[in-house]
Amino acid sequence: MDSDDDRGADGISGAAPAVAASTGETSAAGVFAAEVPVAEVPVAGALGAGAGDCEAPVVVGGMAGLSFPYQVAAAVALAVCGVIACVQLAMVFLHVAPSNTLTKQHGAAVDEWIYPEFEQNWKLFAPNPLQQNVAVQVRTELAGPDGPRTTAWTDLSAEDGRAIRGNLLPSHVQQNELRRAWDFYVGSHDDQNRANGLRGSLSERYVRRLVMLRLTGHHDGETILRIQVRSEVRAVAAPEWSDEKISTGPSYRVLPWWKVEAADVPKGTAGYEGADQ
Image 1 (tube, rainbow, N blue to C red):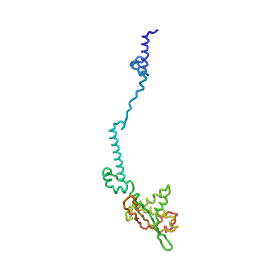
Image 2 (cartoon, helix red, strand yellow; image 1 turned 60 degrees about the horizontal axis):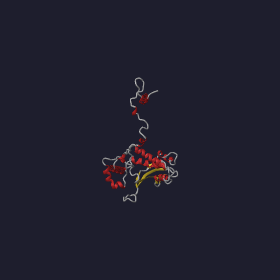
Image 3 (tube, rainbow, N blue to C red; image 1 turned 90 degrees about the vertical axis):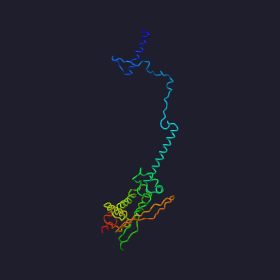
Image 4 (tube, rainbow, N blue to C red; image 1 turned 60 degrees about the vertical axis):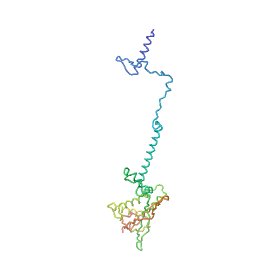
């Protein structure tokens, strides 16, 4: 029967391999060696029931972690930065936007803010996108038994407008074809309607073909001898709250008469045979 000393020795020697096994260390003889005393090994529940009641301190970050004076200073700094950013966006918008009531009244202030550091070499819209209404109109010279006769002006842009109005899904042709054709012509000709190179000749041919296509069905099959195109430009009236005085009278750019050729008339439409004559 073992003595108390033997049992104590066995208890210590029995715990050592377990500790050594947890560290994964072995002695040269292949026996687990315990370098840590048994008393230093933490035992579950050894700290007592009250140990679980301790909580780690909560660390507050961001502005909430600052003292009140620093919070006020940070809020003021953020507000100033936000105001400056809004003013910058507003000034850049007015700089790149078309001429309007605000830019006419405060143009000097806008320029002082923008130049030279924030100069912009682009525009938000095309020139006068909403301040002018441009209508493309055409009249024709028809062959008749008593000789040629000239018709009244037909507003092709108004026809496109009627087709678009009330249409939830208007086609791109109705919205853009005529307008882009006219812009193409104006951009490739000078004020005297002289073509600027090959693009001028191409734009003239394009306008002639487009106008003849739009005239299909207008004259009950009568032969069209010549066509004349013009643009009517009217400025959009100033709003009621504005003191700006704007003339809304029309101004015209009239192109010369063009003799209709076979290349101008879509095949299979009325007037094609007359073009060949």
